[in-house]
Length: 270
Image: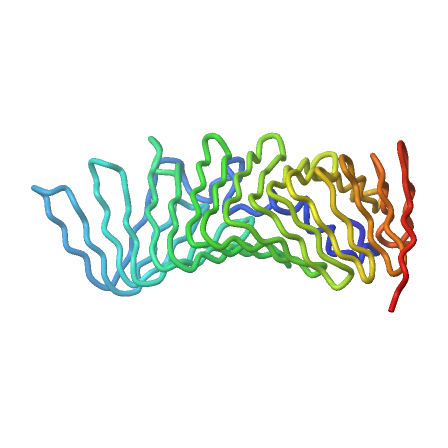
């Protein structure tokens, strides 16, 4: 992302770049070792549980989890963490009210299910949601509830985010992207982070200054700093309305290029 790009539309590709811990990160301690520290530990051999209370710290050498309380279910290889969770990994941090960590065969993090006031930070970027599930084996991230993705250039909001980090793609539904320059929204946003573009589908609408745009679909090209609106495109500006099959909107220059069947309606302004 170029530092010269001031438009909030640059927020699109980062929706699939927020994660907590990456499976390729090198462990800082031998594989298979899980360390649990706390002020007090209660071991129940018959139930196969360990209850930790007070200044709880759990680490596999790569991810560090801290919380006031945690219960380790040994048979299920599951750790339930409560009363305020903080996780730190090489790629970012996560905070939530509760979290369940599922461990893999070598006592490394296999799956994370965080719930309640989830906040993920990676550099200047942040993701908030009611719930977040991250599976390291498939590199799949799902965030639900009130989902917000924030970067210095803008914010994207929706109710569900599903990201495949292996192929750098993600889907936000519904989607609204807001910045100082304008707002664009649709029923669904599909992002290709490799190609640096996103496709909005269903009830697409945008407002940039005095320009209002609607269409069936729109593709945002971050590198070219343009949006291509397709299907029943309607562009309204003071005193005129443009109807076209396809319209390319260069949002930094506030310039329009219409293609296909095009009509312009001149309207009197009060």
